[in-house]
Image: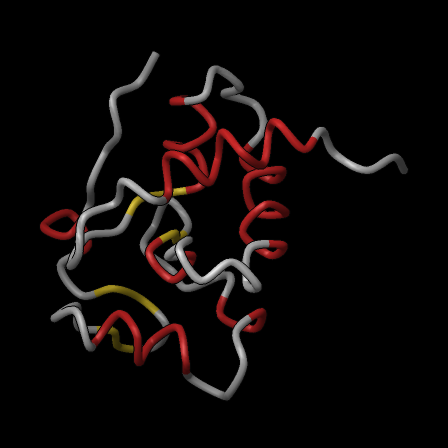
Length: 109
C-alpha cells in the first residue's frame, strides 16, 4: 500500500487544530469538511501519525458514537481519556458522556 498524500494529512491537521478546548469532533466530520467524505479511515491514519506534532490535539477526535477508538495510539493506559477529562469532558467506558453537548462540527464543504 502506498503512503497517503501528505497534503491530505495537512488538511486534516488544519481542521483538528480548530477544535475548541472542551469539544470533540469525529473522523467523518473532518473527512466531510476537507471534501473527502469517504475517507474517515484515512483521517484516523492522520491522527495516528500526529502524535509527534505538539500542536495537533488528536485527543479531541473520536468516532461517530463518541467512543475513544484511537486511545491505544496514545502513550500510557488512559492518556486520551485523561486529556479529555482535563478539558471537562466526562468519559465512562471509553465513551464520552453527553457526547452531543461536546460535539463540534467544523464548517462542512
